[in-house]
Image (tube, rainbow, N blue to C red; front, side, top):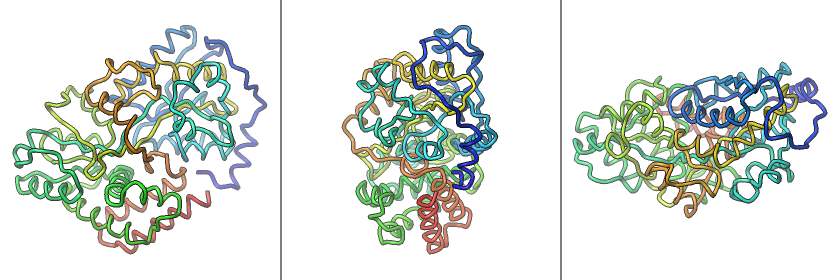
Length: 421
């Protein structure tokens, strides 16, 4: 997140007087440059599906994907800030729905796209609660392309059989008991991805939710649950125990950690449902090579995030950006993107038959489960808070998960950093 002293300079450099009138269906600019962190695996496959739909509708507009890979978008966001400071915004960029998106709104870096919701009828096909997370002061600032679930437990049926595990654990306590069984069978209890901090912070986010429940968890972001209170202390004990059953390497990226599971070298993996599309892009079969369940202790709770695309202020090819947003919000665009990306459509009218068995189950859960936001993926805190949160978790992990008091102080500092951004 930009400091306030820099925001004015950035705004002055890139702010232009722009109209909010909708453009025609076809792009009229020389090209379209989109900025994402989707560079490989199921992410790239999903983007390719949506790109094909854009090119069908806009055959004369060259498509440029300025992707920056790695760290669940952390690397990309750093590059994006630099481009914004230089007055060189892309024509559209990826941002998570929620407080992460609000970071860009507060900095004056994105346009209101409410006019598209009216012209395209999205106000009728996107869930109202989702639209709220994209709205600030009555204005909507991005178009959601998907819904991901972050609280998913993955494992290999073959490895579970070797360890004598016959069903998914239903609680954190049962999960730890099963990790002991994996360890006894010569298999690491859980796969850990320490590269970039975010995947370990993703694990903590899940443990906090599973340990204290959705009401207390939501209280962490509202200020009603204290970071230095007993609920967090209990969750940190669970977290420390879980980390102790992980792989010895602390520098794996998440796809490499995932391979420990699919090759039988690690038992469980807590990761978002993009893991499934990654494995399918590697030729693995859902239900045979890997399987899933809601994270233990979170049955009936859907910890969600949503990727969305914006219309940056000062974009050179604004009409092309609008044309891209129309594809992003369309039924054809979302059904071309999400089955390959490993996510469900943000629209309520997508065809379930296009999606695999996991995603069909996710579609049903999204409609009936208690919805709780993902912190690491932008729903609960803005960029400044997320960066401090990830860093705090990373230091605790690499330090051997020994300094619980220091960890709590770092989490309190992350809360403060988010509030001051």
